[in-house]
Amino acid sequence: MGKLLFSALTSLDGYVEDDEGNIGWAAPDEEVASFVNDIERPVGTYLYGRRMYETMVFWETVPLADLSPAELDFTELWRGADKIVYSTSLEAVSSRRTRIERRFDPRAVEELKATQERDISMGGFDLAAQAFMAGLVDECQLFIVPVVVGGGKSALPAKVRLSLELVDERRFKSGVVFVHYRCALTR
Image: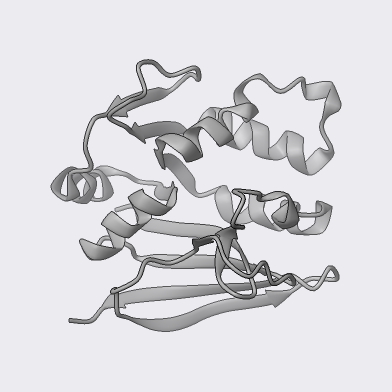
């Protein structure tokens, strides 16, 4: 059975993008990127909202000669995984091993978790909020970047209460801190 993982790079004040939609401040260095790859290895399927998919599809066509070793490793991991994009507006996908679902169905995600041998990772705020509200998220993996952006898109949805159990943590030379929690929905 696969676990549903929520992973994000977030500012210290809890945002995944700033007020202008910028995410450049969260770009991982080689040490962090290599660690990200290691935690992504068990992932067999990515769930994305449209905007996150449009950001991540870069890895489908990026010239391999332009990549660092960690970026090349991630590209191979990403291309080798299945992708499901939840969108009512996206007409077609531009990556292999990808399909579109028009709506988020918690029962279908629960079935996917039950039938997968590998883990499932999700990205995109709206999609993550729906999964958190449905009690589907098994683990949170947050990379806290040493920057305060003052506002923007929150890393975690409002009005969700979770009990968390710390599984792992790590500090990086760049000041980034990784925290890994097991989740339990509380009502």
